[in-house]
Image (cartoon, rainbow, N blue to C red; front, side):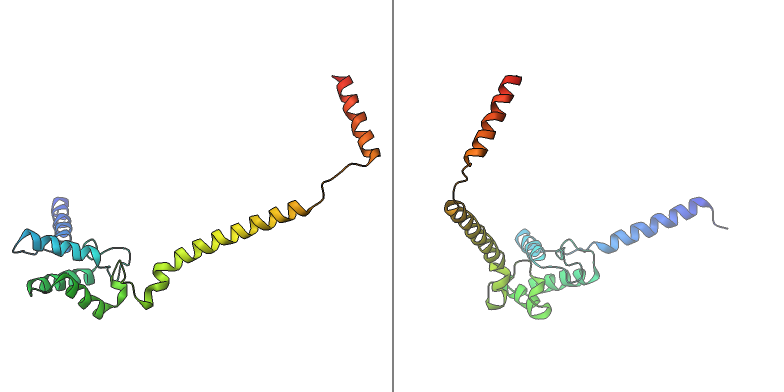
Length: 160
């Protein structure tokens, strides 16, 4: 029979084991290489998590990508070569900042296009309203309406 204290110890061991499994440990030859590793990891998107980079993600594939980045750094490849390798393997999606090319033009300039189209639509609507307001005849009261308005205003001033 297992005592409650043993259950607690077993639970703590399981928690500590799962936490330590999520941490990757890499040994770098210099601080510059460590900084490059984290900069590249922050630039690449986790294919599974989609809103996290591979440096922040706990997904197994992100861990694999970190190991691959580390291996490529150890092989002496440049940052661009490493990112190009990841893009060739996982597609443009793996980049947080996709490259500007023919396929990503809509991604880069689409929001600006829609913003300008919205501003243009508002300008056209305002000008049309101004034209309609300028061309409409001014409302004038007939003599009977003017007399009735005067009577109402006089009655109001007498009541006050």
